[in-house]
Length: 186
Picture 1: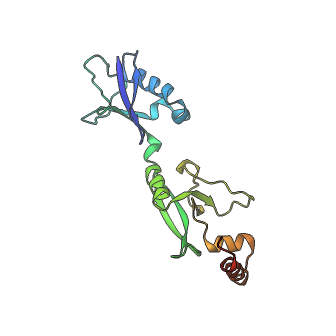
Picture 2: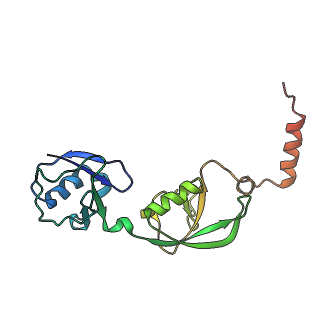
Picture 3: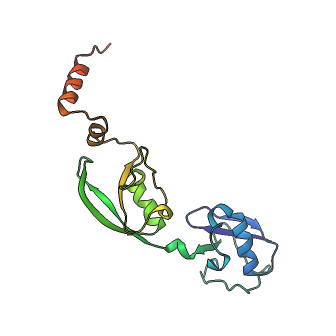
């Protein structure tokens, strides 16, 4: 019997189910999603029925009457899926210059991914990370509660970060711009 299921924001997936009850289905789904669910105990996985969204009890029998489809999959949820974390993110001015101010955010994983997409960020960096190459955090799992982070932008390198990284003065930048203007266009 084929069963469609959906985990988080992913596309529905079809599996060939060979068990008899919801617990067996949980185990088979956990095997299929071994990379995402490997650290999660089977008891922390909840399956919700398609359509009416009721939680399925572990002993419930699954037979041919249990209908699913791509558009009506079983929803797979984990207890930590809606886990929220509170942490601080550095504020920036309109030109992208970091301010010496932090704002407290509380997010779940979906909110975190949406935040990164909205601000066009690669991820966050821990302010206390003093490694030469900071780790870019792209998942809420790697965020530590009540810690301080700065945004690691995807494409934009602000003038401020360029200047501070290469210790370039405004005077040197102006000189460079003047040289570029004088450079032959052909």
